[in-house]
Image 1 (cartoon, rainbow, N blue to C red):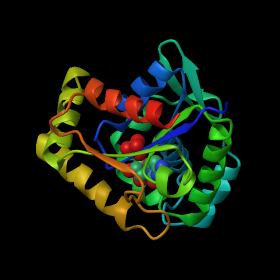
Image 2: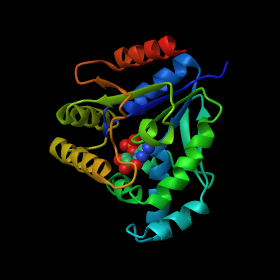
Image 3: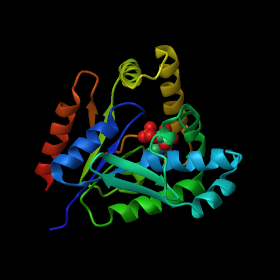
Image 4: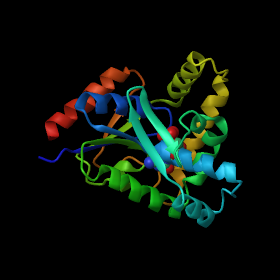
Amino acid sequence: KKKMNIAIDGPAGAGKSTVAKLVAEQLSYLYIDTGAMYRALTLAALREGIDLQDGPALTEILSKTTIHLQHEQSGVRVLLNNEDVTEAIRMKDVTSNVSLVSSHEGVRLEMVERQRKLAEKGGAVLDGRDIGTYVLPDAKVKVFLTASVDERARRRYEEQRKKGIPADFDQLKEEIARRDQLDSTREFAPLKKADDAVEIDSTSLTIPEVAKSIIELAKERA
Ligand code: C5P
Protein backbone atom coordinates (compact mmCIF):
# COMPACT_ATOMS: atom_id res chain seq x y z
CA LYS A 1 0.00 0.00 0.00
CA LYS A 2 1.23 3.46 -0.88
CA LYS A 3 2.48 5.49 2.08
CA MET A 4 0.73 8.76 2.77
CA ASN A 5 2.10 12.29 2.80
CA ILE A 6 1.87 14.57 5.80
CA ALA A 7 1.61 18.35 5.44
CA ILE A 8 2.65 20.64 8.28
CA ASP A 9 2.05 24.34 7.71
CA GLY A 10 2.01 27.35 9.95
CA PRO A 11 3.64 30.66 10.81
CA ALA A 12 7.36 31.20 11.46
CA GLY A 13 8.83 29.67 14.59
CA ALA A 14 5.87 27.48 15.55
CA GLY A 15 8.16 24.44 15.75
CA LYS A 16 7.18 22.95 12.38
CA SER A 17 10.61 21.70 11.40
CA THR A 18 11.41 20.12 14.78
CA VAL A 19 8.04 18.42 14.87
CA ALA A 20 8.21 17.35 11.22
CA LYS A 21 11.67 15.83 11.75
CA LEU A 22 10.47 13.87 14.75
CA VAL A 23 7.33 12.60 12.99
CA ALA A 24 9.37 11.57 9.94
CA GLU A 25 11.90 9.78 12.10
CA GLN A 26 9.28 7.84 14.03
CA LEU A 27 7.38 6.78 10.90
CA SER A 28 10.54 6.21 8.81
CA TYR A 29 9.28 8.85 6.38
CA LEU A 30 11.30 11.39 4.43
CA TYR A 31 11.44 14.89 5.90
CA ILE A 32 11.23 17.69 3.32
CA ASP A 33 11.96 21.20 4.57
CA THR A 34 10.42 23.40 1.85
CA GLY A 35 11.44 26.61 3.64
CA ALA A 36 15.08 25.55 3.20
CA MET A 37 14.51 25.49 -0.57
CA TYR A 38 13.25 29.11 -0.60
CA ARG A 39 16.11 30.08 1.69
CA ALA A 40 18.68 28.48 -0.64
CA LEU A 41 17.32 30.44 -3.60
CA THR A 42 17.40 33.63 -1.52
CA LEU A 43 21.05 33.03 -0.68
CA ALA A 44 21.90 32.41 -4.34
CA ALA A 45 20.12 35.62 -5.37
CA LEU A 46 21.81 37.71 -2.68
CA ARG A 47 25.21 36.42 -3.73
CA GLU A 48 24.55 37.24 -7.37
CA GLY A 49 23.23 40.67 -6.50
CA ILE A 50 19.88 40.11 -8.17
CA ASP A 51 17.06 42.59 -7.57
CA LEU A 52 14.76 40.65 -5.24
CA GLN A 53 11.71 42.46 -6.63
CA ASP A 54 12.47 40.99 -10.05
CA GLY A 55 10.43 37.78 -10.25
CA PRO A 56 11.50 36.77 -13.77
CA ALA A 57 15.20 37.21 -12.88
CA LEU A 58 14.76 35.07 -9.77
CA THR A 59 12.86 32.43 -11.71
CA GLU A 60 15.67 32.39 -14.26
CA ILE A 61 18.31 31.89 -11.56
CA LEU A 62 16.24 29.13 -9.99
CA SER A 63 16.02 27.26 -13.29
CA LYS A 64 19.83 27.05 -13.30
CA THR A 65 20.10 26.14 -9.64
CA THR A 66 20.05 22.74 -8.01
CA ILE A 67 18.87 22.46 -4.43
CA HIS A 68 19.28 19.14 -2.65
CA LEU A 69 18.14 18.12 0.79
CA GLN A 70 20.67 15.49 1.71
CA HIS A 71 19.74 13.19 4.55
CA GLU A 72 22.62 12.19 6.77
CA GLN A 73 23.00 10.65 10.17
CA SER A 74 23.76 14.08 11.63
CA GLY A 75 20.65 15.60 10.07
CA VAL A 76 19.59 17.16 6.79
CA ARG A 77 22.23 19.09 4.84
CA VAL A 78 21.10 21.68 2.32
CA LEU A 79 23.12 21.72 -0.89
CA LEU A 80 23.01 24.67 -3.30
CA ASN A 81 24.65 23.66 -6.57
CA ASN A 82 26.36 20.98 -4.48
CA GLU A 83 27.76 23.45 -1.97
CA ASP A 84 26.77 22.86 1.65
CA VAL A 85 24.79 25.95 2.71
CA THR A 86 23.03 24.42 5.73
CA GLU A 87 24.29 27.12 8.10
CA ALA A 88 24.44 29.98 5.59
CA ILE A 89 20.71 29.85 4.82
CA ARG A 90 19.90 30.59 8.48
CA MET A 91 21.72 33.95 8.40
CA LYS A 92 19.78 37.10 9.15
CA ASP A 93 20.20 38.46 5.66
CA VAL A 94 18.51 35.39 4.19
CA THR A 95 15.76 35.32 6.83
CA SER A 96 14.81 38.94 6.28
CA ASN A 97 14.63 38.59 2.49
CA VAL A 98 13.17 35.13 1.96
CA SER A 99 9.53 36.25 2.12
CA LEU A 100 10.08 38.71 -0.71
CA VAL A 101 11.85 36.12 -2.86
CA SER A 102 9.15 33.53 -2.26
CA SER A 103 6.31 35.91 -3.08
CA HIS A 104 6.94 35.65 -6.83
CA GLU A 105 4.61 33.35 -8.72
CA GLY A 106 7.27 32.07 -11.13
CA VAL A 107 9.53 31.11 -8.24
CA ARG A 108 6.71 29.30 -6.45
CA LEU A 109 5.54 27.38 -9.52
CA GLU A 110 9.02 25.93 -9.99
CA MET A 111 9.51 25.17 -6.30
CA VAL A 112 6.10 23.52 -6.05
CA GLU A 113 6.92 21.31 -9.03
CA ARG A 114 10.14 20.19 -7.34
CA GLN A 115 8.35 19.57 -4.04
CA ARG A 116 5.60 17.50 -5.67
CA LYS A 117 8.25 15.38 -7.35
CA LEU A 118 9.98 14.74 -4.03
CA ALA A 119 6.66 13.64 -2.51
CA GLU A 120 5.24 11.70 -5.45
CA LYS A 121 6.02 8.29 -4.00
CA GLY A 122 4.40 9.10 -0.65
CA GLY A 123 5.98 8.56 2.73
CA ALA A 124 7.02 12.19 3.14
CA VAL A 125 6.51 14.83 5.80
CA LEU A 126 6.65 18.32 4.29
CA ASP A 127 6.73 21.50 6.30
CA GLY A 128 6.06 24.94 4.88
CA ARG A 129 3.33 27.51 4.33
CA ASP A 130 1.27 26.22 1.41
CA ILE A 131 1.70 22.44 1.55
CA GLY A 132 -1.87 21.62 2.58
CA THR A 133 -3.49 24.36 0.51
CA TYR A 134 -1.47 24.17 -2.68
CA VAL A 135 1.47 21.76 -2.96
CA LEU A 136 -0.33 18.62 -1.78
CA PRO A 137 -4.06 19.35 -1.54
CA ASP A 138 -4.69 15.60 -1.25
CA ALA A 139 -2.29 14.95 1.65
CA LYS A 140 -3.89 12.44 4.03
CA VAL A 141 -2.83 14.37 7.11
CA LYS A 142 -2.76 18.17 7.22
CA VAL A 143 -1.71 20.06 10.29
CA PHE A 144 -1.73 23.80 10.86
CA LEU A 145 0.70 24.39 13.69
CA THR A 146 0.50 27.67 15.57
CA ALA A 147 1.67 29.30 18.79
CA SER A 148 1.37 32.82 20.13
CA VAL A 149 3.88 35.24 18.64
CA ASP A 150 5.39 35.78 22.10
CA GLU A 151 5.96 32.07 22.57
CA ARG A 152 7.44 31.72 19.08
CA ALA A 153 9.83 34.61 19.71
CA ARG A 154 10.76 33.13 23.08
CA ARG A 155 11.62 29.77 21.48
CA ARG A 156 13.70 31.44 18.78
CA TYR A 157 15.48 33.46 21.45
CA GLU A 158 16.31 30.32 23.45
CA GLU A 159 17.49 28.53 20.31
CA GLN A 160 19.85 31.39 19.45
CA ARG A 161 21.07 31.69 23.00
CA LYS A 162 21.94 27.98 23.10
CA LYS A 163 23.88 28.34 19.88
CA GLY A 164 25.78 31.25 21.42
CA ILE A 165 24.32 33.73 18.95
CA PRO A 166 23.46 37.08 20.54
CA ALA A 167 19.80 37.90 20.04
CA ASP A 168 17.31 40.56 21.00
CA PHE A 169 13.87 39.30 22.00
CA ASP A 170 11.89 42.29 20.73
CA GLN A 171 13.75 42.27 17.46
CA LEU A 172 13.12 38.54 16.97
CA LYS A 173 9.45 39.05 17.72
CA GLU A 174 9.20 41.89 15.22
CA GLU A 175 10.97 39.85 12.52
CA ILE A 176 8.64 36.89 13.05
CA ALA A 177 5.53 39.10 12.92
CA ARG A 178 6.78 40.84 9.79
CA ARG A 179 7.46 37.56 8.01
CA ASP A 180 4.01 36.19 8.92
CA GLN A 181 2.40 39.36 7.62
CA LEU A 182 4.25 39.10 4.28
CA ASP A 183 3.65 35.36 3.96
CA SER A 184 -0.05 35.54 4.68
CA THR A 185 -0.83 38.54 2.49
CA ARG A 186 1.05 37.58 -0.68
CA GLU A 187 -1.18 37.02 -3.67
CA PHE A 188 -0.08 33.58 -4.80
CA ALA A 189 -0.48 30.61 -2.41
CA PRO A 190 -0.30 32.58 0.85
CA LEU A 191 0.13 31.15 4.33
CA LYS A 192 -3.35 29.97 5.29
CA LYS A 193 -4.92 27.07 7.13
CA ALA A 194 -6.41 24.54 4.71
CA ASP A 195 -10.13 23.96 5.35
CA ASP A 196 -9.45 20.31 6.13
CA ALA A 197 -6.32 20.88 8.24
CA VAL A 198 -6.26 20.09 11.94
CA GLU A 199 -5.11 23.13 13.89
CA ILE A 200 -2.73 22.47 16.75
CA ASP A 201 -1.84 25.35 19.05
CA SER A 202 1.54 24.43 20.50
CA THR A 203 1.81 27.38 22.88
CA SER A 204 1.56 25.14 25.92
CA LEU A 205 2.56 21.81 24.37
CA THR A 206 5.97 20.19 24.11
CA ILE A 207 7.46 19.07 20.79
CA PRO A 208 7.03 15.35 21.60
CA GLU A 209 3.37 15.97 22.53
CA VAL A 210 2.69 17.66 19.20
CA ALA A 211 4.54 14.91 17.31
CA LYS A 212 2.53 12.27 19.12
CA SER A 213 -0.82 13.75 18.11
CA ILE A 214 0.29 13.98 14.49
CA ILE A 215 1.42 10.35 14.51
CA GLU A 216 -1.93 9.36 15.96
CA LEU A 217 -3.71 11.23 13.17
CA ALA A 218 -1.53 9.42 10.64
CA LYS A 219 -2.36 6.03 12.15
CA GLU A 220 -6.09 6.78 12.17
CA ARG A 221 -5.97 7.65 8.50
CA ALA A 222 -3.60 4.94 7.28
O1 C5P B 1 10.10 27.52 7.18
P1 C5P B 1 11.04 28.71 7.10
O2 C5P B 1 10.80 29.72 8.19
O3 C5P B 1 12.47 28.32 6.99
O4 C5P B 1 10.64 29.40 5.73
C1 C5P B 1 11.29 30.55 5.28
C2 C5P B 1 10.38 31.36 4.36
O5 C5P B 1 10.19 30.65 3.13
C3 C5P B 1 8.98 31.65 4.86
O6 C5P B 1 8.94 32.79 5.71
C4 C5P B 1 8.23 31.88 3.56
O7 C5P B 1 8.43 33.21 3.08
C5 C5P B 1 8.91 30.93 2.60
N1 C5P B 1 8.18 29.68 2.43
C6 C5P B 1 7.10 29.67 1.56
N2 C5P B 1 6.46 28.50 1.31
C7 C5P B 1 6.82 27.35 1.89
C8 C5P B 1 7.91 27.35 2.80
C9 C5P B 1 8.55 28.53 3.07
O8 C5P B 1 6.75 30.70 1.02
N3 C5P B 1 6.18 26.22 1.58
